[in-house]
Image 1 (spheres, rainbow, N blue to C red):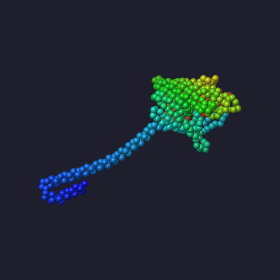
Image 2: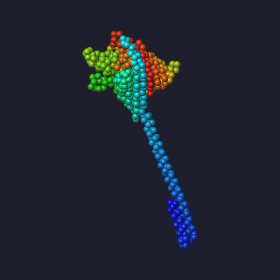
Image 3: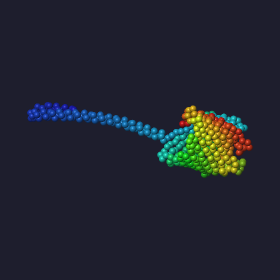
Image 4: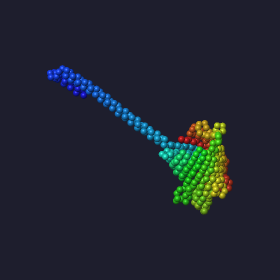
Length: 423
């Protein structure tokens, strides 16, 4: 552009003599002034155009930066959203235990338990969970005994369920799920702590009341002779009486097992319950003698003493179908709570569970050798090393097993030391 202007001005200057011959001095001066003004205007336009190009290049660069930053924000939000929707939780326990059963050699063993679960929060207040755990197919134990020359250990499906929170107070769930029935101080009188029922469940709760329903199956396949569906309904109240809290309630559980073969283990594995066989030489003909129509009454009284929580509890059950040996109960006290560094707890329990009070397959797998038909004492203690690491022990003292099934009950003692990590 500058070159064009220079050429034009030079042409005017060279032609000045000829033009001046035919044009007056005033007109020629005006013509030169017009050319000069045009040159200045063109220079200004060129400078403005260069500035616009610089601004445009800067805008493009800023736009690229903005797009990069936006992509990073979107990616960060996506990762944050995933972290908010997916929760991972679990625990690991290392256990040493010693078992002393009358008439048998003492037994020592080291065991581990590892559990992990993914819980996904979905739209419409719904969650879906998948959990795995060590152990075999035992419905009431996820322990794995160490040994076998360092052999690899089994890991099985432990949880697989969905849960829909219809409102803040009402839920519906189905699958292989956590046991939703209230258990005072985690009492295992009816249900072992590792038992995860399979079926459907629902519940409602408010500030002072709760109701829980479950429909569970011990065998759902119609091709099996022992196909069986059970159900249970539990309700309770919760009150705060000043510095004292009280939770109490009732439960009814209908488990129709009469005439059914064993659900787990060998043909004659009834875990302390009464059974009968049409052919004593053929264990496959052995079946449960009773149904388990269990009526439960429970209570937990909580208070504070020496600035520490104290809980007194009781759990009672009676089977309406059995003719004898049909009741069971547990009473106990717990002081303190191991919930952080330097915190501790100690508890004492006494339990008496007759052989046909509950379905032995699902009750405590540790007390008096597991199942029903046992009574005795239990002492428990734990100390918090930090918020997620506890060290504890459980001592089953003077347990007696087999009062209803043996001529003389056997003495059964068990001592366990646990270190537990939660995440």
